[in-house]
Length: 103
Ligand code: FES
Image 1 (cartoon, rainbow, N blue to C red):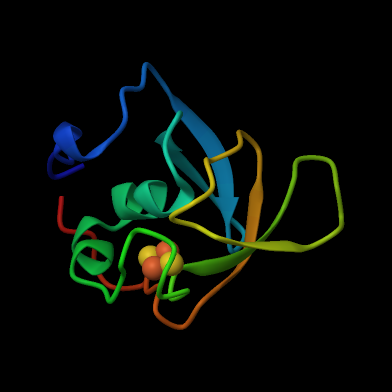
Image 2 (image 1 turned 90 degrees about the horizontal axis):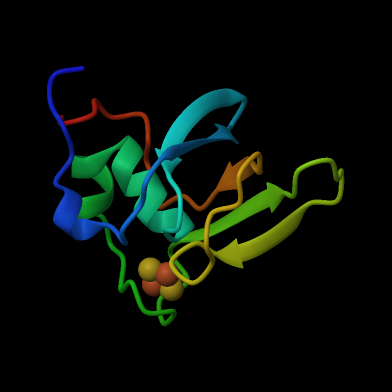
């Protein structure tokens, strides 16, 4: 790993938890919103993305499944906290995790 993401962006956390993002296992900080966790995965892309971070723009919409459930739900990822073991199945077109992580 080339570096460490800046911790001041995140709510205090003691450990990383595993989630599934589009079929890939990822470790993200507990006790944070999903969008913040996506920022942890790709700092540059999310930091410079078109996001209001306060529930107004809807650009951060994601679809997900709770652990052990098949039903697909959707939410604004800036408003919902991460759940250990959740599966993120789809991302809004404004969320690009494919560009190279910056840290
Ligand atoms: S970032 Fe705008 S609604 Fe979530």
